[in-house]
Image 1 (spheres, rainbow, N blue to C red):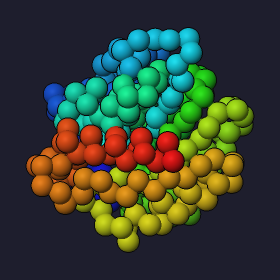
Image 2: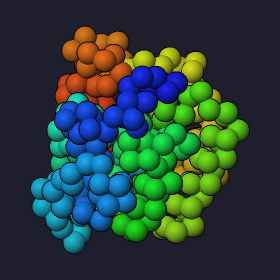
Image 3: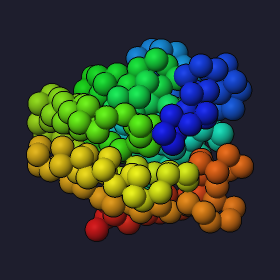
Image 4: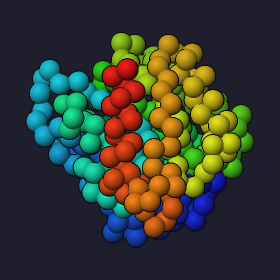
Length: 232
């Protein structure tokens, strides 16, 4: 996902090989899978294992880090947090996608925002993506503002939580403009911003062989930070 690196390009140009690795979208409902262009197999109706009328419904908008590329869908950090928190989860994430970058389903984050709005969540988690590196920052910032504003307009009572781009390859200096632009967009709609840091980057056993995506222990490390930040 770093600067339209080969892996991100492969996610768009060679969807078949990615399907052999993992369920691309990590969606939790059949209609979400349709929005994602059928790129991945839907997981169970609720990531927490039980659908409850009182469970908080949560939508996650993200890329291959959130979708758990290279792992099972229930090993991605959104599913791990959902299991702990008892969420009813819609993980809408698609490998290769960003606010401008098109993912393996041929769509950017706007398609995930459409699906999130349709699911009427109480909480939306939306992160910056290093897939947008290499694109004019004005264009990326405009897309961020548009999509976050759409979420707020359609979901006036929902909590919107933005967070920094997670990456094994890209450095902090590269990611800083993306993170800053998304934070401004989230602040503008009175959402919340959390800095997750880079919980798995350059740590033995937490990165897959591609140097970009987290292993299961890496996803667990992200999940632990997310839980602590949301509870703070």
